[in-house]
Amino acid sequence: MTDLTALFTTAAQEAARFRTALETRPVQAPADQADSLRRLDVTLPHAPRDPAEVVEQLIDAANPGLMSTPGPRYFGFVIGGALPAASAADMLAVGWDQCAFNGSLSPAAAAAEQAAGGWLKELLGMPSGAGVGFVTGAQGANTVGLASARHHLLREAGWDQEAKGLWGAPRMRIIAGMERHATIDRSLRLLGLGTDSLEEVGVDGQGAMDVADLARVLRSAPADRDHPTVVCLQAGNVNTGAVDPLRAATELAHEHAAWVHVDGAFGLWAGASPSLRHLIDGVELADSWGCDGHKWLNIPYDSGFAFCSRPEVQTAAMSYTASYLTRSGAAPGAADFTAESSRRARGFAVWAGLQELGRQGVADLVDTCCRHAQRFADRLEAAGLDIVNDVVLNQVLVGFGGSGAEADATTDAVIARVQQDGTCWMGGTTWRGRRLMRIAVSNHLTTTADVDASVAAVLRAVGDAA
Ligand SMILES: *Cc1c(COP(=O)(O)O)cnc(C)c1O
Image (cartoon, rainbow, N blue to C red; front, side):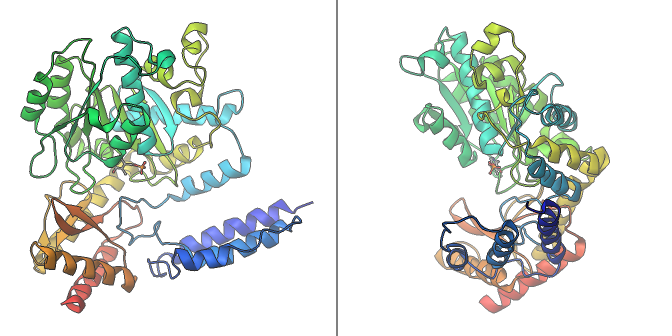
């Protein structure tokens, strides 16, 4: 018999060792994917092996290729660092090996999602009656939101999408800002709506939707059942952090009988901070929302939330048994709010993370990250660098040496040097035709000292690249 206590202890000790070392380990992994593959692409054994030996080998082979993404000085993409209790809860979810399909397969897993789902709605300022699906991330959540929109609007138009598909259905209008996230486009491709259905709305200098232009686009077709319309709004532009004017845009869209979906992967968390809540004013008026747990809430990967103001629409669009549910009157299970059937028990980690932080802790996490972002901007600007965005949230865009091909090359060289240096990790982005360094502060571990050490690393890299 395998000694499970010893085996799981090895795994937990290694995880704790890695996380404790993040303070001092270079942020950039020493091994790249090709190196990692050489270590991991060993012969597949014919006969079973000792589990303890397998785990030891995995630890050795994987270690050089582990990025310090959960650490305090990783500022690439929008990546949170998993909270301690949430991490331990996720280890339990794996150890318990529960299937979160419904309450009969795992009463605890389903109930953890219910309880945590209620807290999430309260923190984010959502309607308390909204449906919540625990999904893999905002990509999954955007797909659920847009599938709910598709179901509702086509049913209103007298079309049973779930039975007939889209062949012969009224053509749907999908209206979205020019700086929407690429996951919206992927959801449209997956849902058979296609990116050619997109009608783009102009944005302001920070990438937030221009409501006057939204009015123009909405007016270009009649607001009736023959023109089922979805308006996709965004809370948190992945480059600038800008939030669309949610109240004005939603009210306008609703006057045109449109469904409003808000992609708020990280930006919706502004709602958990009393000092930033004004940024997402009117968010509760929308019809569906996508949000991430693994970004700003610092829940381990993967974790996202699909909210829908009408739970019965969400389950009619998503449920395992489709319209059978509504006909039978059976209560929907946890998986009926998502696109999956058998699912990882994601609710435990969210439950633990929210209990660990409390209402005040979530607000402090959001506020502190924003304060650090502002400090980055102030310090880098004082050193003569170009801060390209209005720092309203946790995102900072930094330019090096103006615009043009030469400046772009300098920017990429600085980013490469920062990554090699290992103090911190920033990525690059192309925004409005210009290469920029993007700094996203989303980790509960980051301190002022981490920001200052990272600013110094960027300035060193600028000196070296000159
Ligand atoms: C990150 C992000 C997404 C995608 O989220 P995943 O968690 O990667 O699925 C969607 N929209 C926005 C605005 C994002 O920042």
